[in-house]
Amino acid sequence: QVQLVESGGGLAQPGGSLRLSCAASEGIFSFTTMGWYRQTPGKGREFIARISSSGIISHAESVKGRFTISRDNAINTVYLQMNSLKLEDTAAYYCFARKSGATYWGQGTQVTVSS
Image (cartoon, rainbow, N blue to C red):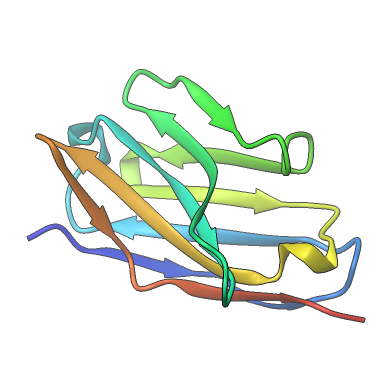
């Protein structure tokens, strides 16, 4: 069973930065895609960023230029570097991984942006 464990969430001020980590229980090169979604109460899950096994990256327009997804295959971890945080970035952030037609999710990590 694939396990994804997120960390790095917390409280940040507007304009600040946080880096989220998603550690996988197996080699991330086995996943076709990994990435991040976020969710706020009353809203659906919103796509944030993804990175394919071949290194193709995509970011949502709402975070482009501020957030960056990356990975470290050696330690089976995907990152989301979040800079220039805004109040509207407050959400629970979820890591996902896809392979063989299945999608796996982490438990989520809360990011709160507040002054």
